[in-house]
Image 1 (cartoon, rainbow, N blue to C red):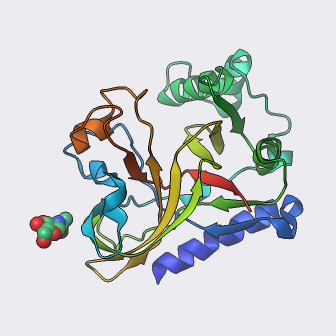
Image 2 (tube, rainbow, N blue to C red):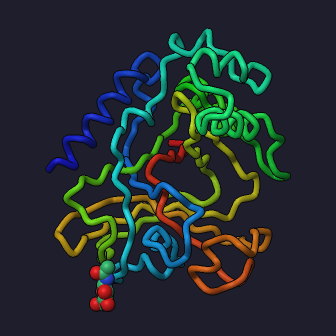
Length: 266
Ligand SMILES: *[C@@H]1O[C@H](CO)[C@@H](O)[C@H](O)[C@H]1NC(C)=O
């Protein structure tokens, strides 16, 4: 129940913040829950976010990890007005550190530097990318990619503290939402919400929403992404250590991490 309250609060906040640009074309239709560290140790609980496509066949039971989010508001975009006068570039980093009152050698300064560098880097071949610092900038990018304003943003539902971080879940439903045509947006550590969004031009990734019933009775509806071409992945990727195969051997799937978004054409 607590779950739902938080969930609706977030939806409401998102809608309120985004209202001027939302129009009736965009709906935040799902909120998905995601784990916070993808660079997990293969024996850790977080590693239970990984799997293969067969794992989400209806009736299957397996453990999954869902992280709790302490402060959901940190994942919400600032408004255009709030960020209008704040530069967003590596060049302006010294000025930004003064503005946010972080010392040069603080963890926050390092995180900002890394985020800005990622946002200024050329995307890998076959991808276009964009760092969205506001909903308007996310929508502009989506419009350029899909050629339309009609989009859906998927996010994870929040999990309350009453849900164990890891427990067995039975797959109650599984629905393929999209193949390839999706923009995953990864939350970056920064003083305000910044999402690194990327679109793979010839992606074979598939996006599913699944309905899971936990051992404690909770029902969650996260998104699950399967990457069918892993041949170019780093052999050291934690997914291979968890799943026990090599790049290109099999698809790698994972729950969509909780603070990320996926943007889809409607
Ligand atoms: C999940 O179920 C399996 C099989 O019943 C059991 O061995 C395992 O301990 C359970 N895992 C959790 C996290 O409850």
